[in-house]
Length: 114
Length: 112
Image 1 (spheres, rainbow over the protein chains, first blue to last red):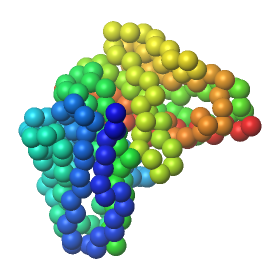
Image 2 (spheres, rainbow over the protein chains, first blue to last red):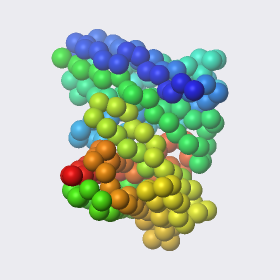
Image 3 (cartoon, each protein chain N blue to C red):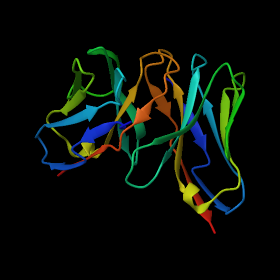
């Protein structure tokens, strides 16, 4: 069974540009979450989608957005990139939403903003 | 706000020794506590998890204990091996159960 797949794995962008990251969850999983990982802040929750609806959102500015498609695949977008957005962006999936669901992570997308 | 404290930040042990990592959480509504192992350049890999209706869970050399009253949970690795070297993260579910709050991580080094 394939795991969580994220594309692209590595990318470099310039300040002010925007970026879109893609995630395919484990087959059968309907919940997709996104996390940002940086050396300073650690792993921080961005948002969760279930049945194409955003269920929860972390404490990030509106430049960070996401969506989920009917096949459960998800994308996240960061507009007007800042140097501080350089991070590992991790997608995670689980069978469903709500308490106690086991969450599996992908390998992440490494974003460098120059 | 919701917070998870993890200690120690670094841990060095000899091969064959045991390693213990401890976490405390602030939200009494948290009911799911996973542990992840992250190797360099990779995403976090789930190694064990525990739910609030269980006090202890074991999987081969790895065990997790949970004390809901004290809001503590711990990871125990016995008979450590060099391949156990990695960064370990504890996490607790938020009140809605829709997000994980992570500790800052423990870098475990196992020397042979």
